[in-house]
Image (cartoon, rainbow over all chains, first blue to last red; front, side, top):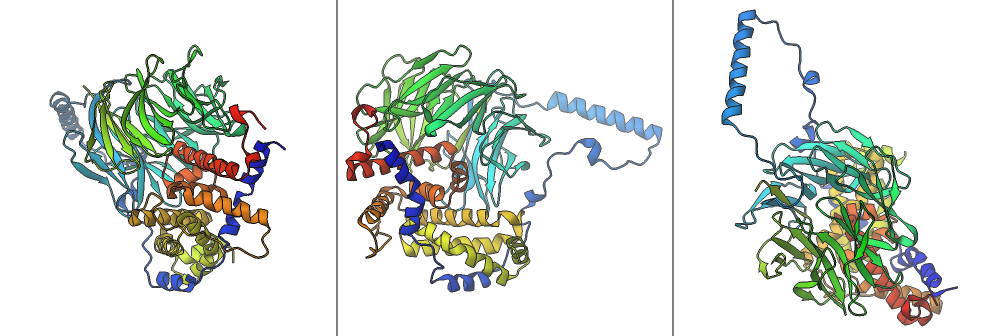
Length: 415
Length: 186
């Protein structure tokens, strides 16, 4: 039996060992617990108005029959409507949308605040630091993601099942998007008309029409646990591979042309560039150890490049994420028991630039959030601190912002 | 009466039905809370908080068949809330071993359990939660991520690094359980 086999056997015993560590028994306080619940009132089934908000219906199904009108009144009414539309067209203005991908203007930061015990969603003005409650109440609302168009954001509400809603950036116009049976993350299409989701326990990815809620499953060969849109309309699929590593594949939005990508021993974290043309992925050099390097794979050609060669034994980089202009990657560098954010050139040139504090832990979670204009990034550390760094210069400052490690998304607006 | 009927009765205010449901699930959830929080008093707080939330919000449960998964989620999230209120994200609490040595234990069984106990003690609570949800409550990692409200990548990362930490600990205790230098299999 090899050492790996022996350790695998040990891991298989972990559930049984946990049982032994904390044997299951009805606790002594159970009767007291029942007294507490018996003395508490149940809440009514539908406390939230948004529970009643329907998915947007088509006009024909929503209207009732109208009474007949006199011809003259009809002409006058029609003229009034046309006039009103003309005025609205001239005076009113549609919001100018940001470019489909790449750098854009900096809007609000929508984030999940976990400090109250229940997760709530706030908007933060990055220029002033002022925050506004968007989605509050007793429910757990989290994982906000602003659409690339900047007009709406989606969020998850945790109840018995995960339910996803969309809302405007002021927290109004909350609409049901997906009810149950899908897992985080849910990914917007570039034009904001669709989202991509995966089933809760893995399976075929699902495309959901934002306006109608209509679902289209994409049948693939292997259950996926994550998916993303590519620039050419195809989908990137992530599924569980052998030995616990991840497997990447691409497929058409109609389920055709499924092809496996050459990403051996890939694991844990990956990132797509803003144009959806390159995949940053982590290769585990030593399958049983911790040595990792970052690669960038160009999807159209299959060209793959290592962008972080091991400079020293034990140094490794993971959790890649592209900057909005696609020229850089952030990564977390682990070395000799420490963690630090690094900025790595996406073409592998030069040396990684190390940013901000060195955390005295090999396990620290360091979460970057890019400004849409590509000129800075905000980083949340798991000790609650928040820093901002310029890109690519790397000069940094600590901010007195709320911790956004619970999830944040930066609105893109027109320049 | 099956679980679904009990849930539906409890939704209509039948506390006796809720008590039957609770008794069937509290043991394992109490154990999970003790494994996550490593403190029986905090575990009691979390379990009570979770069950209270379940009773109060039960009328809003749309699918009675999801009661157990839903309750599990409420208790786990209560564990996280208890941790946040304590303000202890690092291992600065006096963590006591969970188990007492039984005379009947064999040396190797004790050693295996002690190793796991030590490994769990050294993990950050949020990491420990991933391990407990995955191995003790049997949740697949995507469900773990959803329950904890974290990205799937974060759940996988915490799981993988927890396993690496366990491997390092196990390897230190038994050199035959680590690979030879260079990653070659022994």
